[in-house]
Length: 158
Image (cartoon, rainbow, N blue to C red; front, side, top):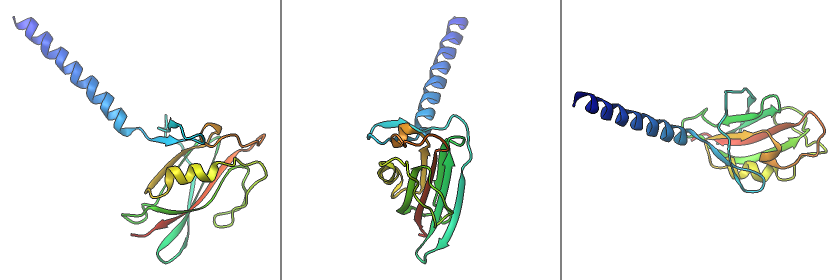
C-alpha cells in the first residue's frame, strides 16, 4: 500500500512539473507578425546584444534609436526610461543597408519594402519591442551582404 501511494504522488508531481514548465514557457513566448502577416516565434534562444541609443528629448517624449545586424539577429528595445513609456511614433525603419547615426539615418538602396509596416504592427503602442533581424521577419532585402536593421522611434514620457 505504501509503495503504490508513493508512486501515485510521484506521478502527480511529475504531471504538475510538466504542466507548469509548459505553461511557463508559453507565457514567456513573444510572438511577432512577419512581413506576410504570419505569426513567428521571436523568443530568443540566447540573449544577444544590439545597439540602443537615447536621442533628443522632444518635450512630451524622446527619440530612441536601435540597430542590429545578422551577427546580432535580435533587436530588443524599450521605452522604459519612464515607468509608463510606450512607442508612440515610428520615425525611421530600414532593413537592408541603412547608414548614418541616430536621428540622421539614411535609407540604403536595397531595403525591404515592408520594413516600416512590420515594425509599426509589432511595436507601435507597446513599451517594449523585440524583432528578428531576418528575411523571414521583413521579407527579402535584396542586399548581397552587410544586412542591417535600423529603427528610430519616439517614446512617450508618461
